[in-house]
Image (cartoon, rainbow over all chains, first blue to last red; front, side):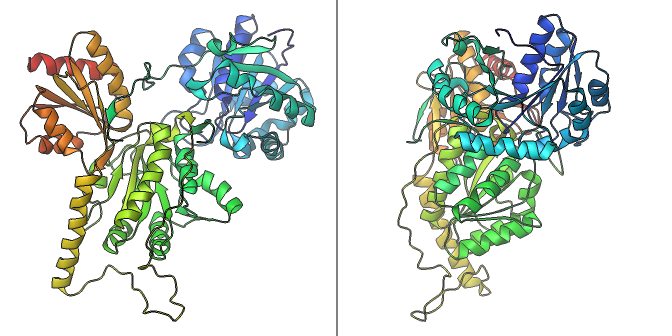
Length: 233
Length: 353
């Protein structure tokens, strides 16, 4: 986390399943730890399954206000955005972290706040990329996704976070193997790779200054001991 | 094998189907399986295949019926309420002896229910669902890797026995992300002499139909079909057996419930209870022999399900009710926790010491 200068508003967007929500939650927690007032908003109106609200307890314990769609995590998952998001954009009294829905479809919702954000000119629009996702395996595919999102929300990306991982099988080597792609993406788009993110376990095996450790929520269907039985399969 | 990537279960099904040579997909979006349709919408045009969002599930399954009649690999996918709508078409496909893949990423029911994971379509998948004497081959994956592998297997079995197969997953399996190697599939020679593909004026035309107005012939057709089913029950049962060597108690669970239960089995072993787990991978054919064998040495069974208790009936039938079978379940979109399964194992052990 070397000398990164936080913008007032940080937006996380990218191909769905790239880790936007985990990054947004951890980024907000980091801001708070460093003594900044911060609020986080869930603008994901596409995926009703995994979302910021899953981390509600952790955010609450840290004293971070969470703004999420009124019906999030209920079966009445209406794709409507709460009015408080406007206050977050317009009242500039705290840092804001925005978790944007996946792909271009998820980013349409952001268009609503575009004018205010562009006027304030104090935002970081982060492209989260995982080069192990099947539809962003190559730099050119990742750029296609970037352009689709920019077209949908009318906002330009300003930075890249390399969140490349293959879940529990991730090793420092799997992350390191994507550094060249991240550098090429940076060169072709002219945007800086501000962080490489991953779990503490993985990042401890990497050297470099701009590493961003993630604390992930444990799921109780994770097979902890990775054991397999026998049978005729 | 190809390199590992990080995929959602739903995406793994879609990509594996393409690798298996499925070039035709018909569906209609519904949570929690929409990513299958979304993935197909992106990929099919790039490889010259068909992606078609039908106006309804009924329409989609009849498009599957059409392509299956021509002998091409074809699939549809949906979630519980949508799969109910497909039942008429599924019965027709079974009655016309056609291979096809139907994917059900289950959610809570009945009715419109909810969008959270469930296993309460077990009866529908394994006992018919549509009308008439028929079966589907039903495969139940328990990891994103199996979502891919069993998709390929389902196509192969459907071709081999000329019948529809179903992949029965749930919302968790569809939405979770795990490392996966998409299998490379070798094209196999399949006999399509029955297919409706045009005769080139060189032979009599084929007829694909499920209408048999003469009862003697319909009965004979059903007898022949059930002879095939008997061979499948004999040859195609798949299951995983976990810590069963010295087990005194046996947990039976499939899909996501089996994953949760494995953690509970490991915890129970640490607490000194000799328990193992049998995970049916084919729900039809149900691994009856494996359970009957286990019944000879264990003191009791625990069926763990995300339903009000459906598979438990097949467990009791498989063991001829020789040992007590208890139920540990959540329903309506709730998932059992390892703690709940552990306390059910402890109760089973205490009551059947």
